[in-house]
Length: 170
Image 1: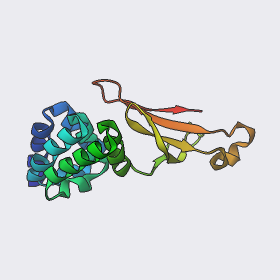
Image 2: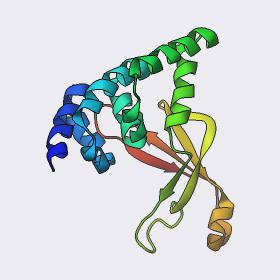
Image 3: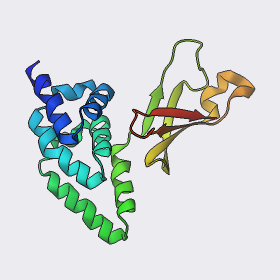
């Protein structure tokens, strides 16, 4: 309704891109129910903390609870403090992403299509590709495939300015 009319323009303004805002909302349509003020308050601080508007948009899409942060500047200061402690902003950001990324993914498809990739994938601690977590599905989850069962990994390929896609590697 009314909040949806305000939420999308506020997100587009916060990430400085209508296209990025649309991709973010397509990942998580529930964001349209958020208050516009939350995007204006939190997303710029997230962008500064995570290093880009694209990373902030992804974080908000997968963890909309971030929009409820009362004082976003405190989060940025905390990441900078961790960065000084660890001696590396990259390591500090890695710690932040570990709390944002979901611990598992569920992949579905139509019956009898891509059976090898269907199932639950668990995040591989510490592994990342293109700054995003890597997920793994063990062969035991595909016992019904018999000898064809094998390890399958899922990693997000950002694809530059395009929307990006998930890649599955056996």
